[in-house]
Length: 390
Ligand SMILES: *Cc1c(COP(=O)(O)O)cnc(C)c1O
Image (cartoon, rainbow, N blue to C red; front, side, top):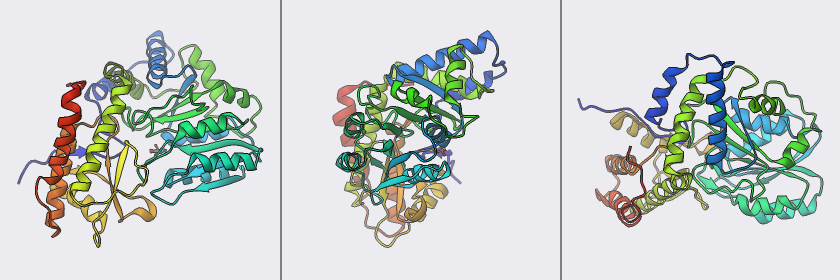
């Protein structure tokens, strides 16, 4: 009866930048040509600039998990002792990978909704000098939790261990001083704050990590980072690249550079803050005790399955938002802020959430959540006016 535009509002894949989407049409080029080398070199340079690192940055044809796997394969050997911080489903992926590659792991586990503290990392490192690597998620997307990677990095830096940071939803949502904080291997993914479809993983590698790559013996072939580095120096990828995604990435990086990485991060932070205020105004509880800015995990009202909210967003408004993963399914819903999200999206999401909750019989005063978002916007964004309007 009414028009319902489809809106993808999940923390990955995220909404696509139109210019990036359009650029994908130009993918009828060959990857061993000068045209391609110009594109690839430009993308690699822009990626480095946007990530703010002097380290090598490489691109893999894979979803983010391929980047995680590559970071285990290229810098470690079977039998290496690893220290894994886990605070959710993505932390558990590190554990799975360590197991797959025969590396014994000591686990620092935070219950879902909590973060592992830098003190825990420091103490674990002090208790066992044999750890070869420390693994964490900068932003644990499954619970909306942020880790203090700066303080963790300071602890790891003093040891021989490498610090491996899954920043797949950390990049573009929180400050990450890769070189200054000693983040040896940082993994990003295309379908998060980079505003393009899934299919590319990014890996930033420090000198300390490259030295380890020379002695690491874990089996690898497709994700051979030294081979990628050698090819990248000549403007090419080791294997056939995902040309259409690289064309999209070039546009997205152009956009992010024009906006400024700081502003991309501030955008996510402001939307996250406004979301937290709106949830408070609606009497809803946050799931995380250490909420980050990539995604806000919210507990469903008492006695309600969060799936009802997901379904209502889908059926009433054709908007795709995400449920909890694993055992958190039914308990929480997640509102994303990373990449190409704006206040317009958030006003609609909060207004629609009010309608959905009222429809479930909750005592909602229409406009109370929206007003909270308006207040944050008025205070922060109107004052700053540093927002790109395209
Ligand atoms: C999305 C995501 C990944 C990668 O998942 P893929 O499905 O392989 O892209 C890894 N870690 C975190 C924290 C993520 O949010």
